[in-house]
Image 1 (cartoon, rainbow, N blue to C red):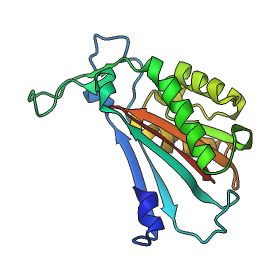
Image 2 (cartoon, rainbow, N blue to C red; image 1 turned 135 degrees about the vertical axis):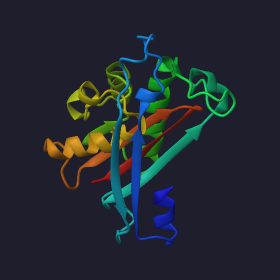
Image 3 (tube, one colour; image 1 turned 180 degrees about the vertical axis):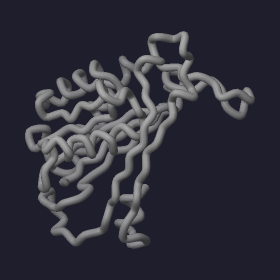
Length: 198
């Protein structure tokens, strides 16, 4: 991960790119999934800077990354090399998403010595509005402090957080010094969060 490469001194600056073309994977007859997703791309530049080693530093303050193959059947693409087809997205993740996203965000905040009260903005994976609202509620952060773009872009998966960061900055929501929590969930099942100061 980019943060680890910077911390180890191997690199000074990293471009992290998230891009998705879900339109190629949609089962257009499944209205439960095809209306939720969009194609998109976004990028974030991470750069090493000297800090004090405290929660007031700028940049990534903590991360929490998780995966558990026992949940592989709730979010996956039913194709690929094993079938010789592109396949379609299969998703039954709602119940797990809210719980796992809130838990990972709390763990990352704990690692940084911070609480939800310290958070200026949650910049979530733009899965769907019900998951975003449910996660914010579990974190006890009001929706007024959540950057939401899903209504404009749909769920662009790996692109959704970079896109939301860009939109939040352009709207004037995210300002230098703000404390952000990003959290995401994806196939496999994998999920995680980052606490950072903009």
